[in-house]
Amino acid sequence: MVVSSNYVPGYKAVKTLGFVYGLTVRSRGLGGQIGAGIRSAFGGEIKEYVKMMEHAREEALNRMVDHARSMGANAIISSRFDSDEISDIMQEILAYGTAVIIEEDAKE
Image (cartoon, one colour):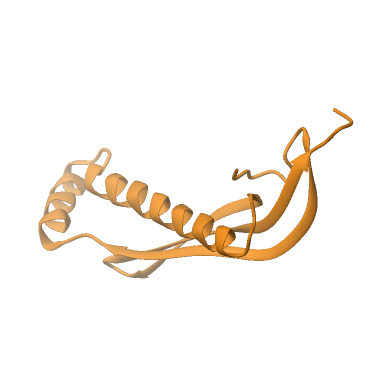
C-alpha cells in the first residue's frame, strides 16, 4: 500500500523502517524529440513527453516499492514525486516516502 498521507486510515504503523526511494532518468529518442519539436511549434499537448513521463513515474514508483519490500515493509506513507531536468533532453523522476509496517487498527 502506498499513500501520500502520513497514515493509512484504519491502520496503525507499528514500525517505521525508514526512507525509501526509486529513481529513473529518461530521455526521448531522436524520433520522439523531432515529433515533440514539431508539436511544440503549433502548441498543444506534447503526447510524446506525456507518455515518457507516465512511464518514468511508474518505473520510479515500482522501484520505490521494491526498495520498501526489501526492507520488510508492507506500506509506504508520505509518498511524493520529484522531478528535475538534467539537460535539455533528460528528465529525472524520483519517488520517495517512508517505509512502514502497518496493522489493522482494532479500535476502528
